[in-house]
Length: 372
Image (cartoon, rainbow, N blue to C red):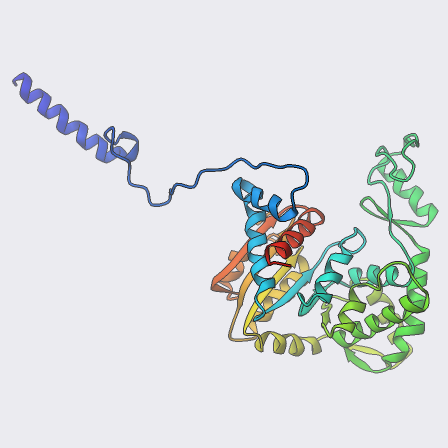
């Protein structure tokens, strides 16, 4: 074979290899075919003193991983808040009230940004405790942590178990690094028996019961001249926002309701709220969901769309749980779309992180971006 023929054969073989091996072996000067990749360079967030939380969220949007999700969540939630045609449903799970997130929800209710709230009996319990004069306190998650109320205190030398045993002896309940003296539960129980239960001596829906709790919280907050705000249930009652608590039995509030029902005509209709909530969703021109945490509140908010012809147009989820375990709390909103809980065209974002960090940031930035 001549030299020219050999070179021709090599050129033909090289071209075959380029076809076989794809973009990596493309001829110099010719860009490989790319369908997924588009030019969208990562930016580098810049922060400065005096910037607003909305400006900070915009800087998050330049970055990747969780930061970008936060900015998208702000954008979606801002659109939910700004559009008067959107009916907003709010799911609140986890220890959001005892850890200091209570006023964020109160302000959203009072400013017309929550049309239906689904939460836990525990959050309603802690909300009522603060409404009538009780208070949660900074504490220690571990005995070797610095004491927030006594920074000069020496470590006790206790093990984690001994630390909690000591708290039990002192009559103090611990929620990670939050303390609650147990006498506040006695105060709460007296409040229920004196100011709530006597007004519902019949079978009522859970939503009717939470409304009566809100009325009583507001009344006692005023009469006792409590410095703390009357809270979530009171704000919901005063603004005609229904509160649904589908797992109310799983709380001190539920325990006390059960105890009272044993010697009275009081009872709760666990299914009654489903009609009320479904009607609220059915009548919505558009619907949006803000879901904080997971569990029952998350599913109750989302499953409502299985009872009507439509689905959510917007949804934001703030969770600490990953999706790869298959659990409900970490399940993505995209997965919810497969169930018909979100419209195919819905705008939705999931942010993974501590909700006591992400909730204030997302709400504040969204309210700013919505022009408030």
